[in-house]
Length: 163
Image 1 (cartoon, rainbow, N blue to C red):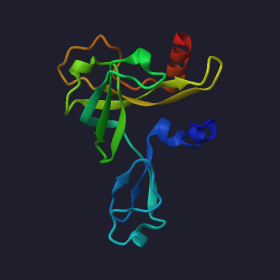
Image 2 (cartoon, rainbow, N blue to C red):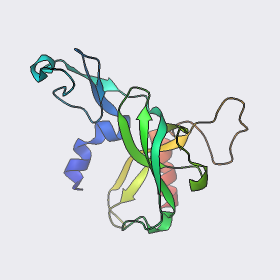
Image 3 (spheres, rainbow, N blue to C red):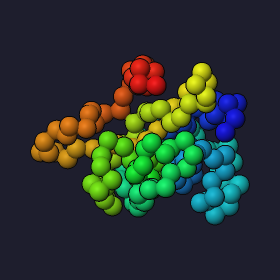
């Protein structure tokens, strides 16, 4: 992906910014300019409003990756899931901070800000969302780390320290 395209996608990649149709209230991610759900697409012209997704959802389906794409060899095995958000849109993302065998359909997750990749040793570091499990009430705290999204500045400092 080009650097220019990556920066254009920053609002949705970093903030889960989508859109909501003010006619039928359907939420979309990534944002759309016209609602395909409305019977006449013309009804939604200029009625699509910016909408912030919460990042909360549950695993709808998932796959454990054992043969990684180039650049992800050190992460195998890892889980890629379809996450049904509480607002409605289905997002694809990696599930982190949990062993692959612990991931299940219906697992409650939240989006968290993480390092995705780096372009060369001195290149641009790309960040984006991944999904981490949400602890159920009464569950013992997991040893896998915090269950809240990491603030951007803290995540960036952590990633630079480990890079």
